[in-house]
Amino acid sequence: MGKPIRFVGLDVHAATIAVAVAESGRDGEVRSIGTIPNRPESMRKLVRKLGPPETLRVCYEAGPCGYVLYWQLVGLGVPCEVIAPTLIPTKAGDRVKTDRRDAEKLARCYRSGDLTAVWVPDADHEALRDLVRAREAAKQDQLRARNRLGKFLLRHDRRRPGESKAWGAKHMQWLKTVKFEHPAQESTLRDYLGEVEHARERVTRLELAITDAVARAPAAMRAMVSALEALRGVRTLTAVTIVAEVGQLSRFAAAPQLMGYSGLVPSEHSTGGPGHARRGGISKTGNAHLRRVLVEAAWAYRFRPSVSADLRKRQKGLSDEVKAIAWKAQHRLHARYWKLTSGGKPAPKAATAVARELLGFMWAIGNQVERAQLGGSEHVAA
Image (cartoon, rainbow, N blue to C red; front, side):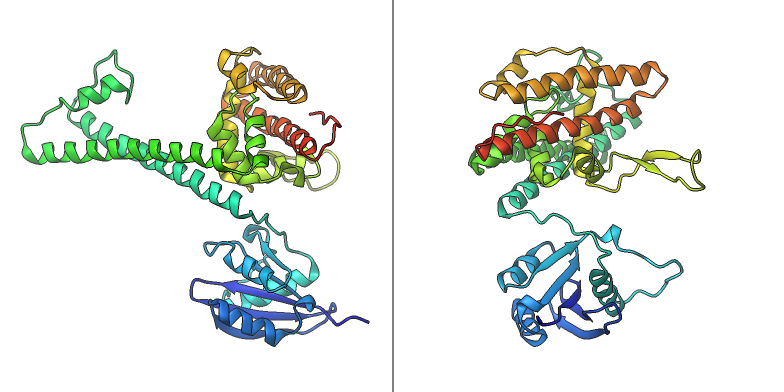
């Protein structure tokens, strides 16, 4: 008979880690081990204290400390899982929260199988994801900088020339000619304008870095990015975001599982038997970065199916199977969008529904590409 398994829950913070252990068996003891410094040597001592690595099962919540602790434990030979915080069971009326209690709850729930693990990216995916999210943060900062400058000018009735495009070349040239008589307002304008230009340069720099990172990425990752670009509305930044946030699409057994991961599936409250099903808005319980780029891409399916010169260029060199899935997606999603809008659905809701189905076609393309890389030839239908 093998040695009993110990389930270890870690409540991880920047400086400390609270540790609790749940012994094997339904009624096994759950006890706190105490708090240790969040340092590699402290974790090594803890593992030696708890027993052989093969008898341990460790978990901790995903959070700002990232996956450093996960890779450290894996390197020590200890099985570890990173848990989705929003899916941890919570008792109604429980108003006491401490590090010790959190660690004990993790150990207890982990032993009972009530926790959901998240995907831990490898080094290549994590590096690309950090870069993509940095670019997303830069775009948000750029929007705020533009809004501050635009509202400042509007308060003083300074309006851009009607023929110029907002934040285009003519608009930027006009901004540099705007003057104020009061020195304080002139200083304010120059500061706001400087922030807008700095934000634009930052976004450009990060986008070039993403292009370079994709060119240096492993061949499997580059192939997946290129294949996803076969879809209408999916350019490099969208494809890179999907690959960085999801990883291997084939890790989902079916397309609906991937849709649920994105949070684009409708919420539901159905009780009281048949006839009492009530569905609400999308659950938004999944990856928000993934959800954002999918909805942006979905708006492209308002237009009739066609293959533009740019899309034809992106599809050059791809397999006929991938092109067929992309063409099928155009017909299916275009018809879906107009069926919903003609039936009275608001356009944003129709685009969200299209985004959910678009993810299904991405799943099909991802499986096709990954199977081709393994030497398979079986076709995956959307």
